[in-house]
Image (cartoon, rainbow, N blue to C red; front, side, top):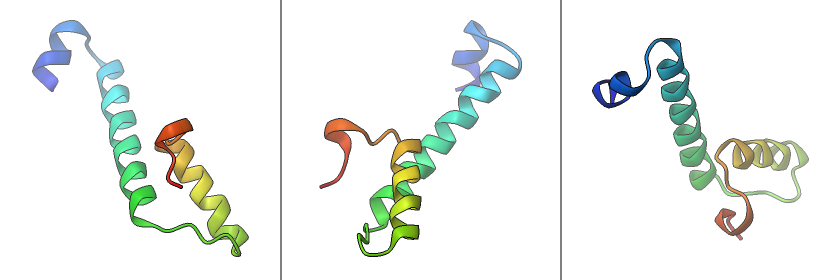
Amino acid sequence: MDYFLGGLLSGAFVEWIEALLAIVGAASAVAAATPTKKDDTIVGTVSQVVDLLALNVGHAKRK
């Protein structure tokens, strides 16, 4: 990935993109692995934040 993006972009911008992709990937894994508990408001709130970070919106959201 460094070679591909390094040719097009350079410096800190590439690092920000890689960090953002890592965060979205990790958030997607957490969102997929944790069930939503509707009766627990704290877990529900955290789950909503994780879904937002994982870009689980619209049709990508679990039902």
